[in-house]
Image (tube, rainbow, N blue to C red; front, top):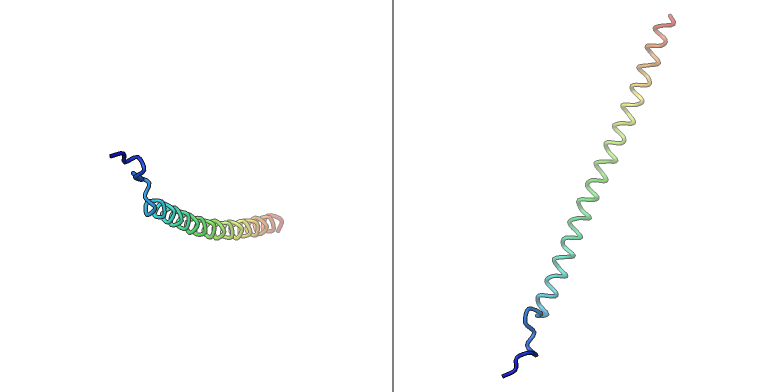
Length: 67
């Protein structure tokens, strides 16, 4: 009548499902990270473009002041 050998809450199917769920979570996080990296890259390029435009605008204003 001793049931200590019975794997309560330690079934192999539960262990494999936990691993799969963890892999899915890692994949989701990697996808989100990739998306975030693309957005940051895009924003960086937009900021650089804006910086160049501002520099050009300042140069024009300085030229107009000298004329």
